[in-house]
Image (cartoon, rainbow, N blue to C red):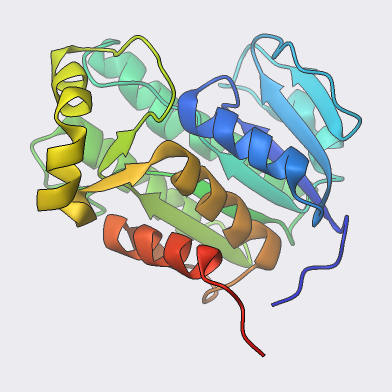
Length: 235
């Protein structure tokens, strides 16, 4: 699908994070995106004619964002936290409550918006998983799909390879990064590059592909999306 130049007004939540940061870079370079609004708790330190930064501290109440969101027609939500880095209560608050509250205000402000949500592999919409992360991501997914957005895209990546240097959050991530080449060769559908994931999330909302109320993209699906995006177009 050919996307008209400068048509999409995109909002990104979580642009100071790894995937959100790549989503921002890709959106600023994409001619199909006319303007990018980043909403977060701190400044990005980036200057770009397409970029508008909105500082917002309390994601438990996104009502003050209604006016800003009324002019957006697509959203990429990458706000999150690592398991073990915060308490269980805080993990649920960030994963479920913040996502639902932001989506509620966006839906009320612009009912036609498309929404990409950074979920995770193993997300359990049934709520039966023993893993809090899986239950909370599943709970957030259920709520988002029930909100009535014309297009919702739920991305469930497995291990996200950081690409650029960073301080890893724990030993498991340090180990996975160290063995990434071998891990990717043995289990290609269990890994995704952070920049590829971000590109897929942005492209989903600016092209508004998929079925109403879905779909869910598992790691294998995200890889296929990225491969199709990089594949030379033929006439």
